[in-house]
Length: 168
Image (cartoon, rainbow, N blue to C red):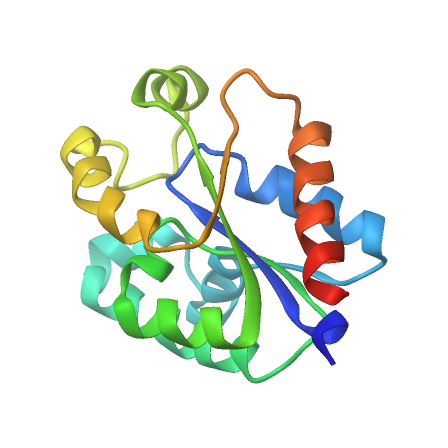
């Protein structure tokens, strides 16, 4: 039944995935999962520690494993890490099993939202280039919602409308 499918919220860092995901889960009475939190729990260390000690490849291995696990279950609202669905196979698996929504925002909005934050290893580097490399993968996701100058509650309503339309 389509109404049991997961709702997956993805997009670049700073687009509001966790904030919006928690609110969608609350509205639907579903459990909320932030895949980065699951990875931190499984690895027993923070994401910056995983990147520094083990490398990005190990982090992406955790992501693939978490992606497969939740794609094989239903009834969740899931906020992915910004790179999870950049991987074509992860994207395919989630699109086949879930309603996937990509939140978007301009570079200026992301910069303003994330400035001064710590704990985002990929934001400390050339994140502009990372953003540009990921745009095509994000564009492959059929449902896109721009979060610039929009209150999270409005974005939540947009997702709930998509959900209701898919469930009919």
